[in-house]
Image 1 (spheres, one colour):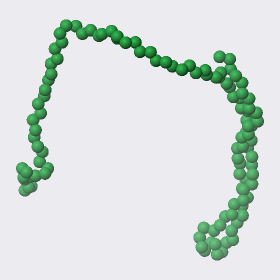
Image 2 (image 1 turned 135 degrees about the vertical axis):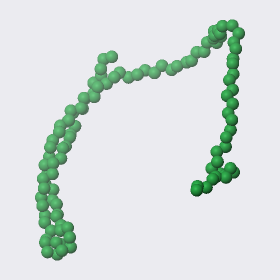
Image 3 (image 1 turned 90 degrees about the vertical axis):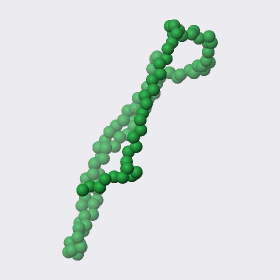
Image 4 (image 1 turned 60 degrees about the horizontal axis):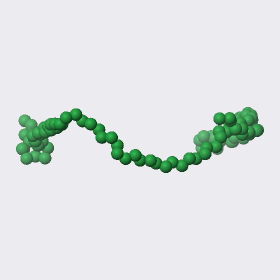
Amino acid sequence: MPKKKASGSKNAKKVTAKRVVRKVVRRRGPVTLAAPTEVRRRRVMAIETPAPKVDTIVTETDVVTEPKVEVRRAATLSQALTEPAEIVVKPETKVVRRVVDTKRTRRAS
């Protein structure tokens, strides 16, 4: 048989009654909004903005192939004792971009 929990145990839930309170607000007559009595003015500094500009950049893209030297070594000790390391030349390609010309022009606004 399972054990019954004691009424004073830590896991027992406390039962509390919750009351719902409703407030009724009664208004007399129609609601009107009062007109503002003050006019607030704020000073703002005017800043001149420069004319918009267009940057024209001309680039060249080259694909360069260079040789790369790689040393291949043995993977295990027994292979290292019996086989020498090999030198392999592999081609390596790179994409090189260069800026050729830069111009800045103003747009008419």
